[in-house]
Length: 248
Image (cartoon, rainbow, N blue to C red; front, side, top):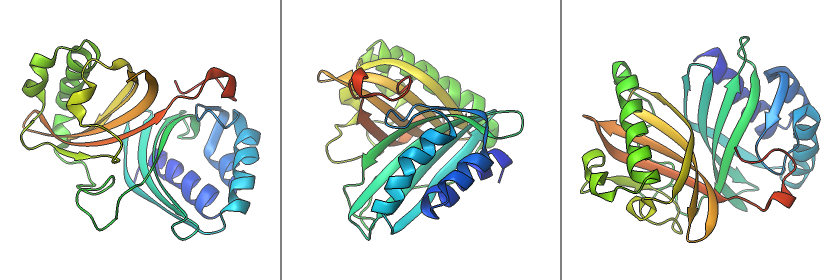
């Protein structure tokens, strides 16, 4: 595991699962820690201020990293959280920027309720975990970049099936999230796009049925087409509720 991924994982495991918020955020972040989770203030003190009460309210925390990879300075992880023996279950998708010492300096996330069964298939976290076909990383990133721009942002639905195996696409999403094709043309922008091998992640802002959303799409590609998708989205709260510069 790369040091960058180790640090991002340790911030989760030590800081949140194990309850050592101050120690972990001090150890694994750099000279700054810019936060885009809108309820958390920037910096070490903002992290501690938010997670201190959370740790008290939620003494039982079963947290695991499901997927994770690194692309240059960026780290992506998808986490599953079972809080207080099933009182709440969450899927969290997180993107971290890192400095030259592999420390975390910026963080974006999307959190959604896990609304299925871990035994059901497919569910929001099931499916292949490891990236493969590493030599195809840049080709797959370029395929997804073009697809997201032309189809999902500009709304050219006629090109959808050039990029997506529509007949066999496996979608991992919450029950209240519509099928992917319904979002064609709803994306306002793709903010970040990173990848490793046959896995590519896009973090985007979209407006769907009048609601601004932040959304992570994790794509698995095979032979140049999207064959599997993990979608995680959440409403963007009104600006007067932000405690930092916002989701992006």
